[in-house]
Amino acid sequence: MDVQAQSAIATKLFINISVLSIALNSSFFVYLLYSNRLYDLGKCCSSAVLLILPLSEVLKHFYVKQMFQLETGLKSGPPSSSSSSSSSGRSAGAANARAGRTRWREWFGAAVLFTLATLFYAFICVVLGAPLDQYEETSSLALTLTTVTIFPIILLIGQSHTYQLLLSETLELKSPLTNSYLNLLKNNCIGVILGAWGASVVAPLDWDRPWQVYPIPNVVGSIGGLFGMNVFNLLSTVYISMYRNRRAKAQ
Image (cartoon, rainbow, N blue to C red; front, side):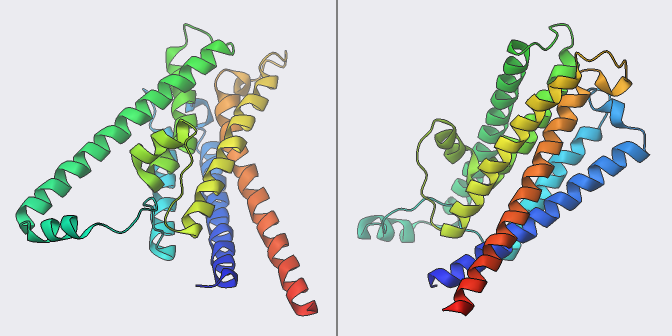
């Protein structure tokens, strides 16, 4: 596939996933407002409203996987002839059992990574001033941050490669399209963190509004940051695509 075709597919991917994310985030906000569930955002133990977020991320992941057939493995050289002959001689039953064990290990590792990321976010929240006695509220914020930052990356590249990414190791995936989508997810993380941090400015104000109570502004800010980054991705992708088309016609 030539560079121009890859660029066209990447543009389509960015536009589609940005539009889908904007629609899902908008629907989430509308649901919170019209169902009067906004004040349940800090109650991860007694309210299931935050379960909408991981369901949205799973929906986006399967949409991208099915529509664009992303290859999520790392680049590697061809297997040696000895390993190929040995693997071909193994029985199908043993291969299936090994695949099942690998799948369970991957799921367990993903759960551990998700838990560690949640604890890390909770620690950062406490360091930045979260009340020590509001465990449920801090847990809600940490779960939200993990769900919209780390969880989509785990779904895309798996927990082992996510560890490498978090440890600042360079990942080179098989598909350039997958690399582009991974960069998009990393940009979304920046928007989420900036949104959650920026929303803290309303907490010390003396307006005495119920939506100022911790962690409602931060949770809304994190999702709003994701929404804003998706709008930015959409507009920038459309602009770059239009600019390239004009240059191509002018040549």
